[in-house]
Length: 232
Image (cartoon, rainbow, N blue to C red):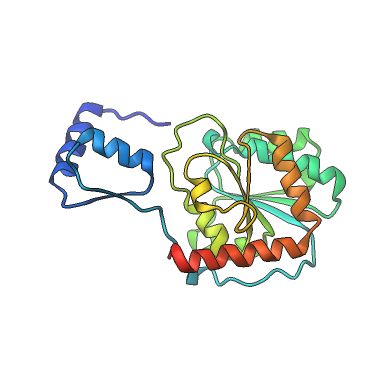
């Protein structure tokens, strides 16, 4: 997604540092594979990202108020936010109380706002713009279901911190079945996994969760418990 100005120099630094390190901790298997390409004899461990669960102050949602779907992140193409807008538009046609909150800013914001308007959901979609990291927990507590709609294309090297924050905050996670996400989300127990870049699949998951507050609570509690046991 980005290009280095001095790629050769950066690779040389990486090879030297990785070779000299006592141990190299990588957040995902693709990153570990890259590290071993730089230094085949390196001692490499894979440990996904963790989160300070206490920062989010989990609390159960009571099911009252509008059903709220949310996304947190930089508005760039590799987050798949346009798929979320299209899926929410399907949900909005059946659930008049549903709303969408897009937390963050980035170069796609104008295009995403236009997309929401085209889909007829501009009045039910809030774009917060950039917010301070300290404000993220407060916003997540307003959200019933949080999405990580990563697209089917792209290098799945990431260990998405947003997903761990969603879980820590007690939001139900709906995420694309790509990269490390199937390792972080136990489908049907701690969250819901859907096919990437599949608007209908994402919309179906949102509709299922919108109609079943008891399922949302069960998934949210299991997700928070998993965070506290394994990802702090």
